[in-house]
Length: 358
Image 1 (tube, rainbow, N blue to C red):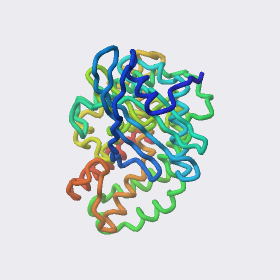
Image 2: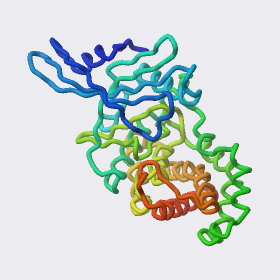
Image 3: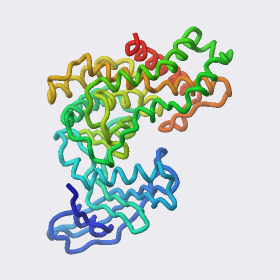
Image 4: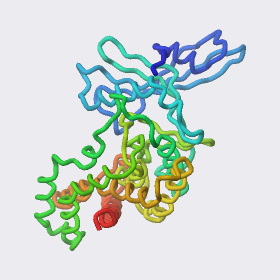
């Protein structure tokens, strides 16, 4: 069910403030950097002062703008349209109290297709990269959200349905196999017999897909990496809902547990709490849907991680080329530290693959 919303900066600010806005001062704009954003996407913080119900108040808001299809790449524009549709659908009104999306005080779709969202300015409380406590809290809240949406109708045409191919990358399989089979000396030194395990995982992707398709499904965020998880005093807030759509139970937790790939968490933190995080997700999910078993959920998490074989190939290719690895959230991290983190994350990948395919 669609809803009309304010469609200008000023109207969005007034809607966000609520009450009787008798004076609205100048709106300041501060561009924000975010490494997941492409050309023709802009993210800014708006802030200012206003007089509301006779009292002077300061305010802030996030403005997210995607140019129309004449400028923005199809992938980027499709994501922007999906998030717009999600907000306009009212989907985010139906979430557990302790996890939600940023509230939207206005949306705009212009004649040339350009999209603007004015959404809540959420501030993360806690460390980044995420520590163990934040990972466990997010895991439980993701489970609660996925359980709450289990059985939700998934027939809306705007929902994202290509998540398995996005992570499984079937178009890259042949090139990936060639990289592994070259057995570069640096790769052999780092991985040894695990090179054959990586090759087997790549060749078994059809089996991984079959496992995922056989398990219970729900609605998923599909990009619940650490950078998109914000912890406030009262709730977990997930930003960037551009890939929302149906997915296997556990798929969102797999995104969180693979956050070390981008530097959003340390692999040492993830490995130290991995089983506990899965149990936290199971507890949150089964509070909503007791009929889905812990074994099904664990299998969903492992299979969704096993989709991400490309990480191992990328690490091997980096060893072969000698290029220093970089993780998006930690641009100043020493290359050897990044490399060791990613190699250990390959171990997490292969362990999940063993449980999925064994």
